[in-house]
Every structure is written in structure tokens, then in C-alpha cells.
Amino acid sequence: MSYDLAVVGAGPAGLTAARVAARRGLRVALLDAYATPGGQFLRGTAPPRLTGVDVMLGQRVWAVEKSSDGFRVHASTTTTATTLLVATGAHDKVVPFPGWDLPGVLTAGGAQALVKGERIRPGEEMVVAGTGPFLLPVAVTLLDAGVRVKEVLEANRPSPRMAAALALVPSKAREALGYASRLAAARVPYRTGHAVVAAHGEDSVEGVTVARLTPGWRPYAWRTVDCDTVAVGYGFTPQVDLLLQLGCAVAGDHVVTDDRQRTSVEGVLAAGEVTGVAGAPSAVVEGALAVHSLVGEPPPRLLAEKARLRRFARALDLSYPVRDGWRDWLTPGTVVCRCEEVTLRAIDEARDLGAHDPRTVKLLARPGMGWCQGRMCGHAVAALTGHEPAPQKRPFAQPITLADLTLHDREDNA
Amino acid sequence: MIEFRFEGRPVAAEDGQSIGAALHAAGIRSWRTTRIGGRPRGLFCAIGACFDCLLTVNGTPDQRACQTVARAGDEVTG
Image (cartoon, rainbow over all chains, first blue to last red; front, top):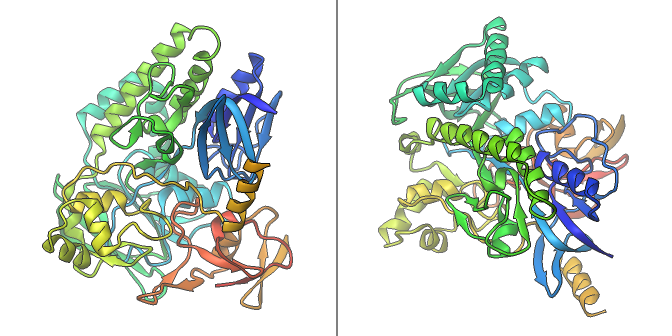
């Protein structure tokens, strides 16, 4: 059967959209790669009730294509729908540093997922480092799990813009205060203008070098901190693979939508982090607005709420950028591309040979050609070649076997 | 709780837990080495994006440890 709406991604945006659409009488399919809905944000919480929605879990969507009467969504089965909503979220962004490929270095989101979703303690003694307000809930989650959090290091400095943004969204201000008081009660120092600039150890992390940073992130005044695990996060990268496959217009790292979540491609909607990282409350609003582009008019209240949360997200973006000084943390031998083990030296050699853009550097030195397809190092390689990071086209959004491909081919011709 | 085997040795996992999380919690932090530098690899992103945590499950290679739910009796190798 064909659906009115296929939603890819069962996080806050996708769940909301599926629920609202079902309530409006649309035939809805909701697909997610995980065995339980919720996405990263709601991992480990009680599964939400979804009445009237065909929920398809464990479905890793590897491609979407336009067909004569809508879209074909390919996972381990193929789902067809008139309209497609992509709500595939984001993954952590990490800047490279010496030792960042040692086991025991985790992304901040990964460390949190291990507690919330997997119910394990990612480490015994940990340092949390990076930039952005997400570091606070990560540190608190780790504390609650019994981890000894030694320090939380925010590379940026407090910004007046951020204070103004918090005044815009009082609930966020309360949330931040709650985290801060929890850290203070546990005597965990929160240091701005500091970063983990190297991790040390033989087979696993045994300690890190912490440096003070200039406002542009150049390191000075180094010291070492013993710990067995590090959680690092420098913001998020929207997962826009499926939207790029369909040719949706992008701006920076995200997909462009109108006020009702319509992308530049007819019939394709996008909601949540893929439209620009803005957090779960914004994703919920966008999920609902996406359905209003199909049925009825968007309530002015939702439009106003979206505008307010977007202003807040924009202020966050401007307050917690990744600043160029991180390049000074690297040595020539630092691995930049983890999959292909491409060092800074190899990237510099490619540039010396005349590679002046990320694509030519990739062709000469292979960063981004491995299993992750540049998901981890893409932004860093772009920055190291003097370019703005841009989303990369990936014809396959997930790895699939040749056997799966031939199966799809047979179904197509059946 | 269920039990699977990593390189022949028993590892406990909670119901629904990934192989990667169970190994990490058991103190096994790396389960493969890289092709060029022989560097150890284990969990990094833990949400299926980085492909650092690849291992072989019941003979099927290149499975993401963080995305593969542990089943009783699984034979896992690096």
C-alpha cells in the first residue's frame, strides 16, 4: 500500500509529525533505524504511544527516490508515499586533536547515549570538553550515572548575545541554571576558554592535556589531567544525506525550508536538526508545522513559537562557533581522517601539490574516503583547506550489501 | 542478562544492549586495529555515524558494534 506521508526519523520532529498527521486522518508510515522510537534525544525513555501510525523500526533508510506518484523509501523493505518528511537529526561534530582516535575518547552525544540508551557508565573518571550548552546536560547525565566528572571545559567565552538569547527563552535559562547548580553541588569545575588539546595513552586514554585558549582558540598554559575517558563535542552536523539525494537546496550545513517545512523539492518536507541545529523543542514545533503544510493552515501560535526558537538557535550558533585556533592543537602527525588514517602532514602535502579545495585534497590524500564517508572529518578537512564546510553528497546514506541491492532490483522489476 | 562470546571469552549484556556497549562496559575498549597504523579502535560516536567500532558478528564482517544488539550465543570477533 502507498502512504500519504512517510516520515524518516522517529526523534522529536518525526514523532510529532507522525502523531499529528495520524490525528488528521492521513495514512502515515514512520521509519527509524533503531529498534525503539525516540531518536537520540528521547533514548531510554518510555516508548511513546502512536495510534494510527505504521511504525517501522530497525529500518536503515539508505536511499529515497522520486517516482511518478510520490517517493520510494528504501530500507530493508521499500515504502512508497505521496509526501516525504525527512527528520533524520544530527550527529556530533568533533575537531581533531592529537590522540582523538584513542579508545576512551567519545563524542559528547555518544557518551550520553551510552548512559541513556545503553545504561552503562562510559568511564570512571571523565573530562567533558568542547563548545555549546549541550556539554552541560552531558556532564549531568554522566554525574547521575556515577561517573566522576573532573572538569567541564567550554572553549568559548561567555557572550552577551547568549545572555540576551536566554532572556528570550526563560525555560532554557532555568534548565541551564539547573545544570550549573548540579555541577556546583558535585564540585565539578566549569571552565570557559579551556579545551582538551591532546589525549594520551597506549591502548586507551590515560590522561589529557588541557590548555587555556585565547579568544581565537590558540592554546597556552598547558597542564595534564588524569582520566580514563573523554567526552568531546563541538556542536552537531545535520544528517542531510537523504535530502541531498533528492536535490533539496541547502544553506551552510542544513537544508532550506519555508515556514511550513517545505524544501525546494515538491513533496519533500524537512523538520528538526536537518533544517539547522536548534534542539528538541524546535524540532517538535517543526514536526507539527510540516503536517500543516499538508492539511489546513498553520496556527499563528506555532509559527511564532518557531520564529522565537529559531532566534534562540541563531544566538547559540553565534555564541558557540568553532574558532580557527583549533588548528594549532594539531601536530603534523595528528590523524585528521580516522577511517583512512590521513594525517595533517598528508593534507598539507596535498595542498603543496596544488590541492586548494576539499575535493582535490580528498582525491590526493583520501580524507573522507573511508567507511564514514567524511561524516567525522569533513568539516575539519574543509577548514584546513580554507573552505566553509558543506554537506557532501552520498548516494548511499547507509551501507548495504550487494545482495540487498540485487533484491531491490528484483522487486523493482517484479 | 544474556551472554555472548568475544574472541572466545564470555561477555554479559543486558537485554537490548548493543555489542559495543556491552564490550565497553566489560572494559574491552578496542576490538580492531587500523589497516595502516595498527591503531586500536572501539566506540567513538556510539550512534552509528563514525564506523570506528566495526567487528565481525557470527561470521558477518563490518558490523557496527554500537548498532548491533547483542544476542545470546553470538560469536563476535574483531
